[in-house]
Image (tube, rainbow, N blue to C red; front, side, top):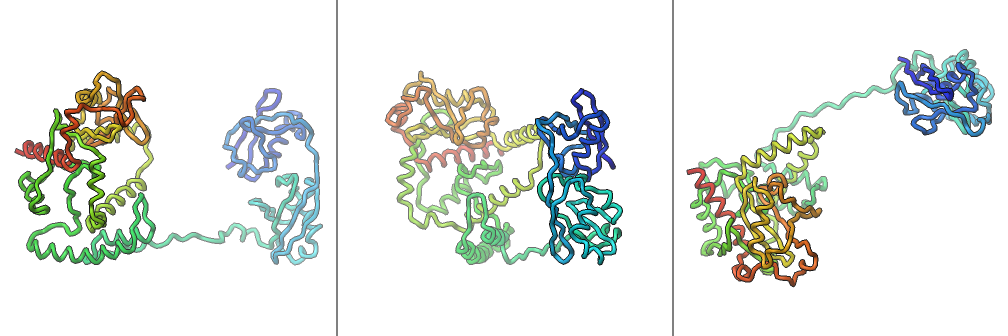
Amino acid sequence: MDKKVTVLLPNGRRQNVNVKPDMTLLEVLETASAKHGFDSDEHCLKFHNKDVSLAQQFRFSGLPNNCVLEMEPTEKRRTVANVIVCIQLNDGTREQGDFLPSSTVWHVVQELCMTQLEAYESPVIIYMRSEVIGVEQMKNTTLKSLGILEGRAMMRLIDKKPEDLKRQANVYKPAEVKPKVENDDDQPSTSRSAIGAAGSGGGGGFALTSEMVKSLKRTAPEENSAKEAANAGATTPKDEPAKPKYDWGSGSGYLLHHQSQEDQFEDNADENPGKAPPVVNVIGPRNAVLFSLDAANRNNDDLPDSFFDLTVNDLKMVLRDLKRTASGNEDAPLLTSNLRELERQKAMLAKLNQYKDCVLRIQFPNRYVLQGIFKPHEPVSRVEDFVRAFLANPGEQFHLFTIPPKKVLPSNETLLELNCVPNAMLHFSFVEEKLNTESNRFLQEKFMEQLTSEEGALFAVQKYRLTKASVSSS
């Protein structure tokens, strides 16, 4: 099917020119110039105020159908210069010579390959994707019509019948889809994921070593056999990872279907026999507690090296999160702004249905952290009022922000809109920069004397949530 372009002439008129894919832009210029009496050698074509190469064929020019080309005069007249034409034969040999663009293809072939041409029954010249078939067509085709105006050009001379040129050389056959092999029940699914991650290098900031995979293979069957011996007759999922003691650091919040408070405390007592629960000093409303990150780091320094060894359950949780993240990035469809807004509202409604409260931690420049519990629909101004009650200078202006990157939270937006549900870490800063030094006193002295450990802060959140869950279930 022929396409059409519109040429805007210097006199303001428009000329429609029907073009074929193998038609050069020079022929378009000559056709439009001949109809209105212009000299094509003194004009050029532009598309969006950019010069287009007249030697290009329309199929390779990148111009759309029904485009508008501006014909403008050039600074100097185009001159005709010899071009170097090289012809490659079937045996790989090449012959080249200088010719004028007005020379025919048959003249070029006769000059360079006259002796070899006698053995060809049906000679065919191929230049780029243009095919000049037969002697008669070679005599009617010039180098200029092929877009060879200057420089060098390479052609191929072959001996083929026209019917053979239409035959497809290579046919693509799609690979057969192999049937999926059923998973072996003897090997845990997390072990197979670990092997795949170790072989491919993994991603998402976590790499699995061969030692971890070997440890996982050795330990997983032992743990499964121990569980089967201890829980005979009970049906529990084989690869379900153990639930963490506290859910602050998981980033996914807590579920509404908790086990009863008595069972939870019994489990904690079994894990740490003879160890009393951490002391929690509530210093204000919203279960407010205050702790120091420096004290938590000092406690971490006393931990043995075995504390940082990855267990099988740790690997299972990491692999689960990596798989969930990778599948979310690869399978995510392209969405419009309206659909993205709709998905965001659906996610907010799901969070409102799942989480009835959120835990906020406000970190001060002196590395003290104030923790409080809020409702998802509360605005940031409520959080600011909560923080102001503990400040040593409540009259000073301050703002809360998240990092990275630094984003100051507006007071009129809700915690749910700012993605602070189910938990978030906020940072405190005075508007006046000179007050943000570590030596400055941010909180009142009476609250600084009632510090809680970081474990106690986690325990306070767990106790509050278990109490709320037991009340709602009853």
